[in-house]
Image 1 (spheres, one colour):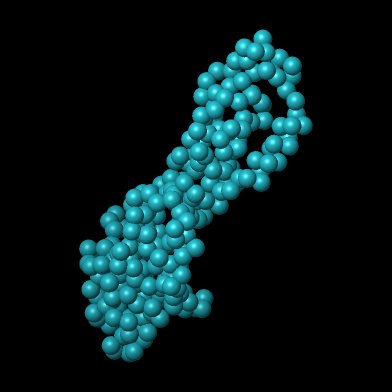
Image 2 (tube, rainbow, N blue to C red; image 1 turned 180 degrees about the horizontal axis):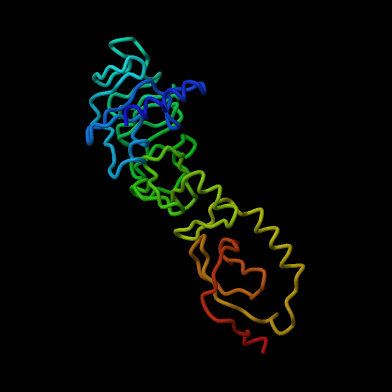
Length: 261
């Protein structure tokens, strides 16, 4: 496996990079679980039936002189720089991407650090523009992404915070918007739909229902404000009387208003 990992590193150098497709680095990690050499924990986990604990890594091998040594930023034998960034806790070696180690998250994050804050309730580093402006859900980052069912907290993919407070991988969020606009967990609108709701107002006004439906009402439940209201039935959608959202669900059968019968 060491030879295979070195071959991957050699191919990477020919392509203008070192390491693997996940990280740019000048060393291999010696996995404490199986004593095999891999460029990174992800490469290890993709090829083994167990996971590499990044915090237990003690030794690395230089890709140039092949000396196995204590995990450190520079090779003690040939002075090869293993990574522009090195975390002695996570044993993360990579290009400088303004990374920083968050003690509360327990892992390294891509910064710069001053652009992020750690929300203690959500237990996640979030962009500063969300401070005081997001809905907190306790330990939300410890839940898997509801789209791909993969881990969010330690994922290399950026997390996207929905207005309801739930998290998705940014890539999963972008794919979701191609099919719909609602959070897959609570059905709350995943983005500001105000402009679309006003367009729908115009379409409803321009699309009168047949006479037999004009006096028909229906009870609805709003997925955005959780309010209940009774509104006129319309095939294009029923607008919440409380928050004016069309993200609603029918909560009862249709009926003709008594004063119109």
